[in-house]
Length: 195
Image 1 (tube, rainbow, N blue to C red):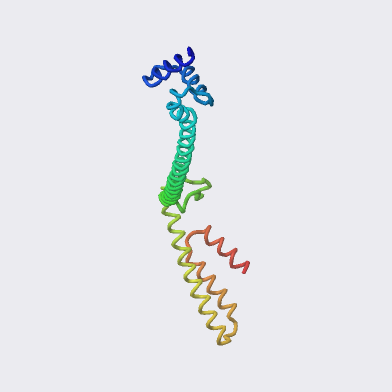
Image 2: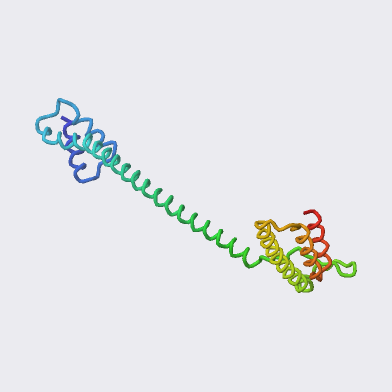
């Protein structure tokens, strides 16, 4: 009888929300038995639910919550990978653009060039630039003349004109006379001799 009064007191305190975890465990254990007094049987479904139903619901809720978290984490990872890929692509494009743009700005076709005047090597770009440009123009002019000569000789070969080689050699040496720069002239003579 004392046990019954104690359980009734615990039930009353349980519904008031003042029981401890240990007291609630006593209630769950009591209502999990088969021999419950008739006047307390009406509480059995309630405490069975609290004991097992809440655990099941909590477990199912946790599973659902874990599934939702996994899905959201998966979506989050997809977003991170996509944003990372886009950022990497932009960085690569920017780097390539910077390299191309920098090369165009800093390109100097005469870099490393020098001239020798009176036995002195001059590398100052501002001093040698006019002479380099003059030599370049003369070389371009000679290239055009040599292309013309080659074309004319190829046309003559079609018609079997004799002594083409001698005529070609004469034209090359005529071209050499037009060159003012001795260094360029010497280099071209060496090239003509090797041909």
